[in-house]
Image (cartoon, rainbow, N blue to C red; front, top):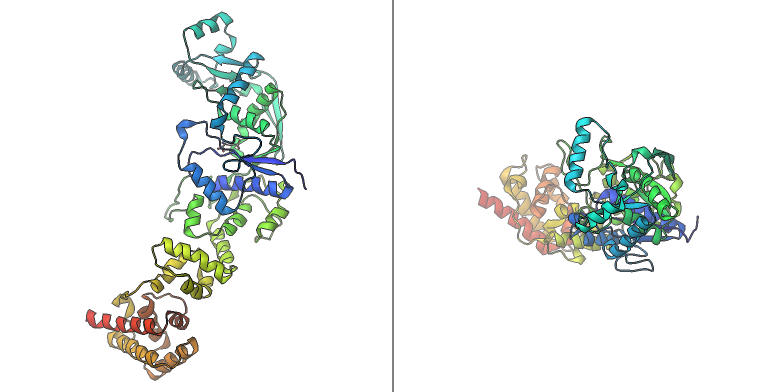
Length: 495
Ligand code: GLU
């Protein structure tokens, strides 16, 4: 489907860091726009000043750029339907609220917060349905004039029909009907003159000519209210698509917006910048998130960005909740890392290693890249695996160094004789290193696993490292020999 008239929006409120759930909504909007050749609009719904979080917006924009989901209109890029910050549009919403009052479709409500609280309390006590009792809807103009003269603050409420039904179509869920008697007289404008989410959202979706609204299922209860508001304004409502809820890995609860931890589990990542810092690839995140609620067929899991754009279709979006599996994401991330060219991987590792405080250089990382590629679940796994290569003068811990079967003396002997043989080796390459060291093991009383274990810890300080001979070849003769000697000396010192 190509349709340049498709205009979709992602409309976050800057109340916190950009998290997985919002990212999935942003992605589906972006994919749908790309798929149809339409436009992807980014609108910042920042009218609730009490919940404003100053880091939310930079975090969002950085994350979207990192993911490569660029917006056609919105902050920084502008567009013909701006401004794209709702806080810059406050006057506009007031005008529409006034117009609705003039048309007899909305009214000013002067009830104080104290009166509303008392009302709620009474409704609770009497077990009545909670909601506004519409007192101000029926006051006379004389009373209004009196309230105004007293300088009472007011909100603007929509005159919701008290009878009949409101219906709408959701492209995934079909026709949804609610009884108007269930709906309250929606507040459109707050007493501070700022719009509620409902008014601002409806006005902007209309003025920005949004064709399809793709948002989380949790917004479904708002739609009947919006339908009434569109009606009151004489506008038609964009197509509705309410995306399935994302469940936590157990499939039992909703995936939380905040940091979360299951019983006995490590803390799980939630915010996109955390995934970025941990070394998930944006390609893997995109592929993975696309599958949380959408499938191309029953088995295909790996999709390039272009394939996702080509195949993404609203018809294949599921309406049942989808569980988020961190294991699956890790697995997919590892697949994407394996698919990277060495230069590409080295570039990405350079940033991660430097951020971890290592004085890493590109040339050496590039040499290690093919050796570690298969072992990385995330890029930051490389920190533990490679830090040894970028520190000078490290001292292996004698407890890790000494191999049980070899004892202190045997371990020291293996380190010293290997250092000597490697020092004298005519050509210091991987094959020659391997041949020499295997020769030493054969001539010794030790098992290959123990002998090389001692050398590995002596060289890297770790029991797990990239392949031994290649690592030696990359570190070079001088460094290798020095490390092995130093390890032997460490055993002297420990005695
Ligand atoms: N500002 C709302 C949010 O934070 C937008 C909901 C919608 O897409 O209508 O998610």
